[in-house]
Image (cartoon, rainbow, N blue to C red; front, side):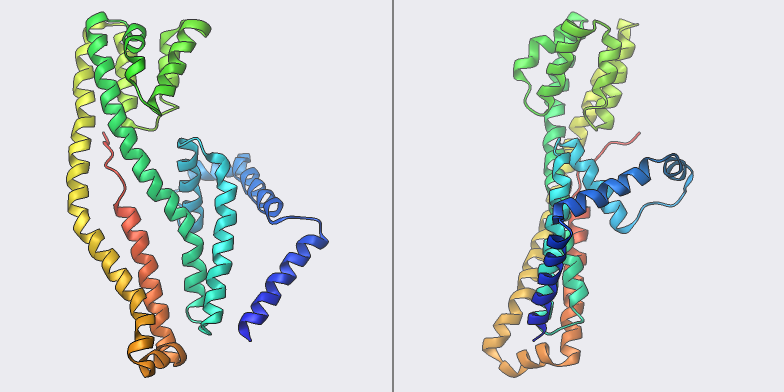
Length: 309
């Protein structure tokens, strides 16, 4: 009966969209643009600069997701992620209603809605590690050539064929700008920092800019590049340390979820107590909350190592 009422509610919402001549995509884009206009106002900028409070909850997650998608050149997918989150929120609520468990309804609704954003953060972790590895190789060969020829344009031009994406596009654009648009090397180098979000890369670019005035400073580039090697070594050690806990978490999560249908076949009375009794429903809600909180913790602890000055 609850599932029928829920389906009727969804049909009513869809009908309202048709009546007002809107689609869910239009509604979300309008809401997102409204929030963006509010953030871009003078008052919003002043509050963002002067406020000492850190962002939490949904606002923080949305900002992190937007930053990740912008860094990977996929900022147009933010609206799609929001739509997918809303769909999964409805799916989670539907499962809870079918289970006739109102205690687990907010758990499923919130947990399912967060899955796309956790996926984006997990993919970003992998992308960031690959970026750091490619930066290490790229900056190493460019620095070696720069120490020999003392020309950053020549050093990049000699090794451009050995650079892989996404770093390749950045340095290819640098060569095009310095050769065809503007010969001011310092301006072109300064623009590189906006294309790659890496503190070590920013430090390397600043050192190369200083080298344009004093070639004797080129010896400072090698220690900067070595920081990327240190980051790779520490990241590999951290991955090794996290491998066992993550494997145990996956095993425990599978056991936790798999034991519920397994209990149906082993002991029907226990299954009925767990799914129909009020205390059993509360236990399921607590288990679901622990599961989603644990997933968030795994994603947070899996982030790559960053060098901070």
